[in-house]
Image (cartoon, rainbow, N blue to C red):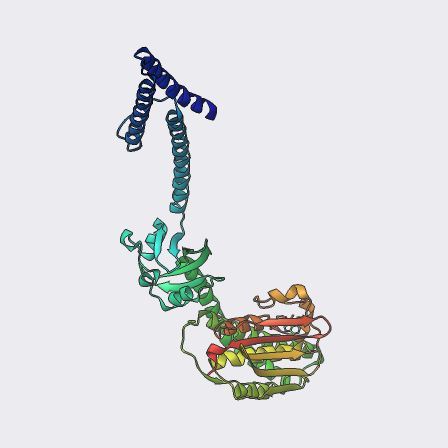
Length: 421
Ligand code: ADP
């Protein structure tokens, strides 16, 4: 290819100059003839370049040339054709992706590093009430909910965010931001209004049933208590004592259910109150001193005040300490509240039966028990740690469990610095 281009070019110049030289010979002026041949060759080149120039501006046809320019033009035409085919293919693919994104039920918003919207699909427009003019706007100008702004500003998006809004109508949305490339974010938006409504219905149902059960249970338990104090025939004694203990168990189950549904429905953005952890710890320990035979050792050196919810924190502490006593095989229970760099660490340790590793992640599920036979003897409702988990969420904290079977367990959590007063 290269070779024939050069050959063509040289032949063209060669023929013209030879013709010039020959014409010069005939008039005995070979040098003038050669010069004239070179000038003609140069003029032909300039004409071809002129045609090339016009073609490059799409003002004329491609130059017809058998030399270097002709070959280059052929090459360029072929390359342009290939590029056009590739571009068409890519456009087709892009169109298919866009159609895919457009057909999603979930909203998709593409945001640049600073937070300006660069694209969104129809679902996002519907859910967030976005219009075409909002392209290029800052996302925080369009979703002004304080929880969203806090979530957006934090910069790391391991978890999704749920929030209520009335952008379009009263609705609950879940958003999850993901970083992609160096300077882009994609935000997925899902409408969870219906899911929340069903969840609230379930919570209300459980709360209503529990409330309804409370009164008849109180009456039954009252009579059972009366019967247990009476002289009864031996045949009835065992039955009454069992009914009494199961009645008490049912009462604590109903109370725990009511407490759990209250915690689940509590608004996460309520204002907290000042809670003195040392005083609260002492009062919980005092209440539980009579519960079981274990010795509870409480250690708290500082007066630590947090912004929280006293009732909920009290129930966290009493659930953890009660469990340590229940499952601690009579060992001492160490209850500590201490300041550390990330916040206030609260821990409850026993040297009891411990928990096999495979159960640890599931302990905070409702009614989850390590071993049913174990609880039938100690009589737990199976809701204690679910209550702890929810109450800790309201304090921006999570329960951590370390345990070795046969060597005891430590249940702990850290209340972050932002909550310390
Ligand atoms: P329960 O009312 O049954 O005690 P919880 O939700 O408080 O329910 O605890 C769930 C389960 O976790 C318990 O049934 C028990 O198996 C296990 N568990 C909780 N605390 C301890 C502990 N300190 N030591 C050993 N097992 C524990």
